[in-house]
Image (cartoon, rainbow, N blue to C red; front, top):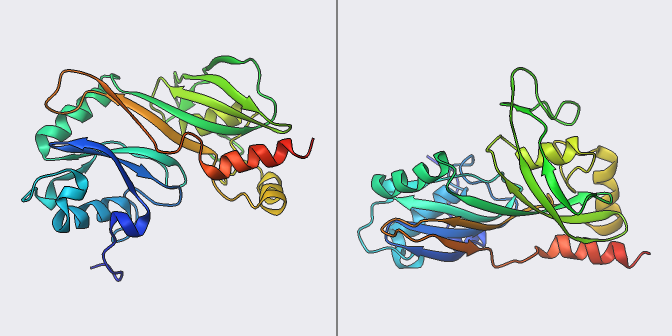
Length: 249
């Protein structure tokens, strides 16, 4: 049993973006785990809210709280769109699309340095598990891994990049950015300790520079794809860092 009082979407600062019978898209802030902190994570909040306020999740009264499925995951330090399914049929419908690579996800990444070219692909092969900042590609068998990117804007020391992972490796964008020589800002696993200290001391910046901006998929009960977007086009902390850095030119 959790030692903590039940959490809700409201207490975690979670916004509801869209939904329908059997599914909902939520807007997760950075610092909230999807599933690794029972009683305090996003799954716990969804279960509690479904039991007490199902309409808040755009679901009908009587939707079973034990039918909650996190269809995909975001790292705790990554913000943005997360999909949930209610019931096995809806979960299978959405999970199959991920397995068959029919889902398109777009992220915003704020990286160190002046990234060139303006658009391209990172295609360094990645192992199943990563080794951290000293070995981001990981040990053992490495698999084909592709991330498409395009530059959105630049400041003196940082570049805001639109990224779409075309394969599904663990921490793929974070690892590819590190291997490209442009690690994500605020990345405590793959970035340098010195860079983390500079960001915090100079700008008060403490978040990971990665935001799940949009997801495109076919909802349960429909044969048409839709795109759900986060309420934040660019998270405030990332935008503030860019603007603050440009002001130092």
